Length: 213
Image 1: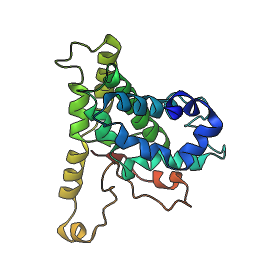
Image 2 (image 1 turned 30 degrees about the vertical axis):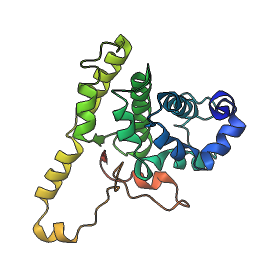
Image 3 (image 1 turned 90 degrees about the vertical axis):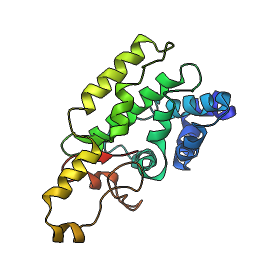
Image 4 (image 1 turned 45 degrees about the horizontal axis):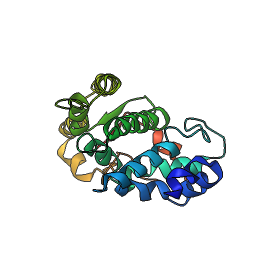
């Protein structure tokens, strides 16, 4: 409760929490069965990321890349994306919309900062979630429905992550397929995590990146 009520809003403490891996620790709590605790975890995560006024997540050369690495690492070290998607149903009041905004922030941030061509391929599951986000949900508000449609229209401009992999696999000769080294994360996104000593910007080379659930 102290983190939620006080420390997350004080940049000195919030910064230290993020650097210590605090964002990673919040992710499983965002699926907590106790909706009261879940709401605090989601709202704290939002305060530290999307609504954080202590850092410009898109800035460069500001000496805060260690913080950005902590956020970036969630794409392959945690189940952040499926956790946010799962809050589409059965979350606390307003939780679905908050998680949708966090999805918009996280995916847009990764696309803007870590792709060379501003193309980010998401899984079919994510595309389907955007398309049906407010379906059969009488509590959804207009802003939530509008954001879900915007995200679907935006990321649906490109094939799903699965379709892209299939196309790439079909285009490779059998020998190349056998010798290729996957650049996909085990869960989360499609870049190999660089050592912590390397700036995440080094992973931006090449064409569009892929995010899975």
